[in-house]
Image (cartoon, rainbow, N blue to C red; front, side):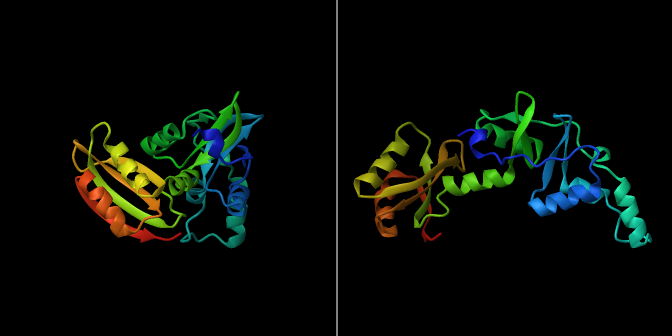
Amino acid sequence: MFVGERMSHPVISVTPETTIHDALHLMRTEHIRRAPVIRHGSLVGIVSMKDLLNASPSQATTLSVWELNYLLSKLTVESYMNRHVMTVTEDTPIEEASRIMADQRIGGLPVVRNNDVVGMITETDLFKILLELMGARDAGVRCAVHMVDEPGQLAKLTQALASAGGNILALGTFAGDTSANSTVTFKVDGLTPDQVRALITPLVEQVVDIRITHP
């Protein structure tokens, strides 16, 4: 899966000259939390709603509402945008974009093509992917197990479920509680929880959790 398949587009952007008031209104109207800042077709920064709210006067100010509105009308995005923008391309693997966002503690990345901004990949887009990967919208038997981290162990698990008539809806592998094992979470339909437990218990170190889930 690549960024281009899951990015948000068309791009909702602002210019450096956009006022704080107008930028905040745009974000609230479009239900976004950040926007690339573009000047003459080139990406020059990125600004978040948090940046803009921090630029607004405190509620404890003694300024009148008219003075506040006048002040906000003079403040522009250019003074508060982040000029050091990290970007990705449409063919960036989605996990690489996720790694960048997690390591840099940022909530979104502009997606560029030939220096043009063609989309945004955000934490919300990644949450939607996680829902799909884990089958969160599908009913079934959800199970989490600890397995020995050796070649062929996962194949044995999936084959046992399939041979008994189970249909695997989702499967993910994660770091285990030790370096010698992995945590595997899967969702399957066509089998009862008791059937699943009986099938997998001989194949895993520990059945951590098993339950029926509904969307």
